[in-house]
Image (cartoon, rainbow, N blue to C red; front, side):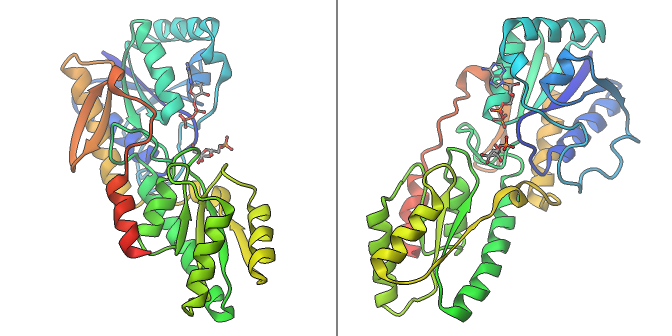
Length: 316
Ligand code: ADP
Ligand code: F6P
């Protein structure tokens, strides 16, 4: 057996810890691992490197991905995938570990259909894969968001101001939801529970009438024009407020201990599955147990977070 590993889509803190775990556990079992650079692009362009224990020394604590990552349109076409398959044959790679998000998982499924043994690990700050409770990178980003909001709060409370904070997540509200659960905001709006401008204003006005003059309104990206929302609130409530788009700062930084441990467990599990002859499976964590599910069970629909939203009713 020869394993290829790639990281694809948006980078997520903890991807390096996953690479390390795959290389170390494979090497421990006498299996060679090759690194495929720039996600599926590296498969098409034959950008393959050897990875041994020294190459991955000290990377677990580093953000980003040493293998680099990319969004590769060519792999979405049959022609691109054919080239990828030729590369795999040329380098005698029979098994591939894909670390990425929802889109990368679609690519993993396609690769699997071509007869390659594929195991996918969830690596995305969006946490938008429903079969797993947590994706690698989510915890680190959540901590970053909370740290940033903490700083915003210092100045907000000093000036008795409100700030709208836009967080990432693509079409998944988990970053906003968990930030609010952790005390990061007074009002939240997510793709799963979207509030209109009027409702946001009413909630804010209620808080202000109770003497809570500094509020954080957390919104998931891609839902509204943040400046339009700000202007609407300012005009309706006759106050001046602020807006902050956290942006790419959320994708960087050293992975948290949780993400490092999660990525390590998942990486080891991927090699274990391949050694046992399993393929076409995605590794996850459910109720604190590492699980693996067939690709057919992986859907991109956001998990039902009703329990968490119920908790928010008590906390906000
Ligand atoms: P993420 O994995 O973070 O969700 P993307 O959605 O951008 O990121 O997907 C990453 C890459 O996965 C794409 O650039 C493409 O190379 C591959 N991919 C996505 N969807 C498909 C698909 N339907 N078929 C084949 N490859 C895909
Ligand atoms: O999927 C991770 C993510 O950071 C999303 O939260 C965000 O919408 C997107 O990637 C940004 O993508 P890009 O790096 O292509 O701008």
